[in-house]
Amino acid sequence: EVQLHQSGAELVKPGVSVKISCKASGYSFTSYNMHWVKQRPGQAVEWIGVINPESGGTDYNGKFRGKVTLTVDKSSSTAFMQLGSLTPEDTAVYYCARCVYYGLTDWYFDFWGPGTMVTVSS
Amino acid sequence: DILINQSPASLTVSAGEKVTMSCKSSQSLLYSENNQDYLAWYQQKPGQFPKLLIYGASNRHTGVPDRFTGSGSGTDFTLTISSVQAEDLADYYCEQTYSYPYTFGAGTKLELK
Picture 1: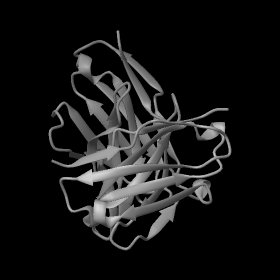
Picture 2 (picture 1 turned 180 degrees about the vertical axis):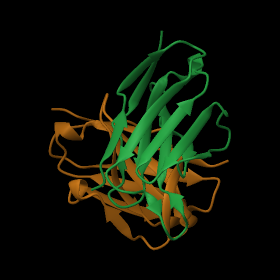
Picture 3 (picture 1 turned 60 degrees about the vertical axis):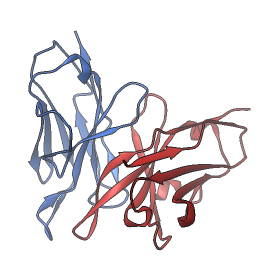
């Protein structure tokens, strides 16, 4: 059974960094790209970026470049997202999502993690 | 960036009614190399993560009830629920994965009378 297990909620102060994890199980971790998305309370979803677990190659939404760093640890089948210089606008639920590949590119997110709530407050 | 215009913002219906919601893209999402649309629909119930309903504009994901149907191609897409059930109360999002940055519609909130 495919599962994506995310780390727990974080309450952090402005200006600091936080690192969220997404541990995959039930499939070959390196065979699917991992995407990350952001959802602010009551808001729609924003795509943050993607990492290829095999190569470590990344692509970021320009809006989040410099704010986010995506990495993986293949040995533990875990993807990580580090958010830096946090501000209250970073308060959101962050999801990891596995993406099915078809043709020449990623196609759709078939499994999502449960989300990690990050609250930035002084 | 590809803009996704999703409408209506909300729908209030009675159980058993048919509903349709729209998703319009600022450019074609049809990938000529494989003749597939890179458009997916997700359902998000309160307090839960989004779940895949439809991929490739019209392919129902495993386990999705057949009352959910996706249609359209290119720039205009529709999600239809043939007979709304109480458990369909949720937000519905479309997403394009044709090009980076992937973008989502603002969502349609389905409420029951």
